Image 1 (tube, rainbow, N blue to C red):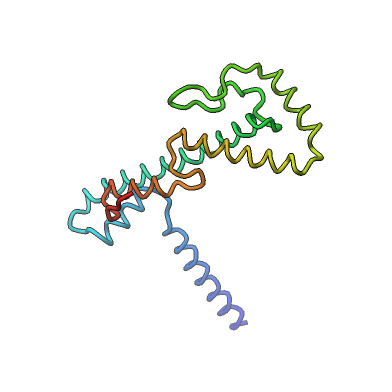
Image 2 (cartoon, rainbow, N blue to C red):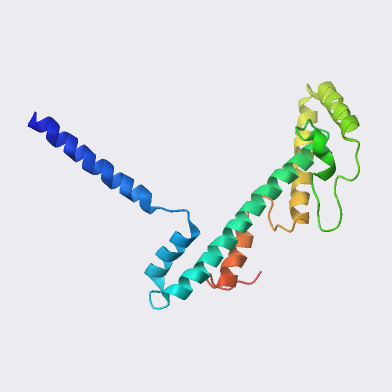
Length: 174
């Protein structure tokens, strides 16, 4: 009986320790800023926290914008390459760039019907599928470039620039 009670107590302590470690890890920019400043700049804690929080907030905006742009460009590539898209009803506003609307004024219903017919006829052709995939990749890549991203696969170059802007990385020449 004592062994079971002792084993139960040890398991409870270990569980409590694990849960406390999980609770310490935060995704809150303010908490992360406080942790960083406690470790790196205790003398100017208040200013450090404010500055670090601003950096973390801007970092999250870059990541969110990249994900949104990636999704929109993938949808646009499917639409533009003639593939089936779940966005048929909203093709007039898929991608807007600084210069102009990429999709233009398209009759959505007619276009959806054409896409479905085109896909049905060519679905069995693996060569056609490979070409469509390559075309989609090229269109999506160009779309991301038009949104101003240096890479269509990663937001790291923009984060590197942001780090430099806030002084958290060495200045590099591009």
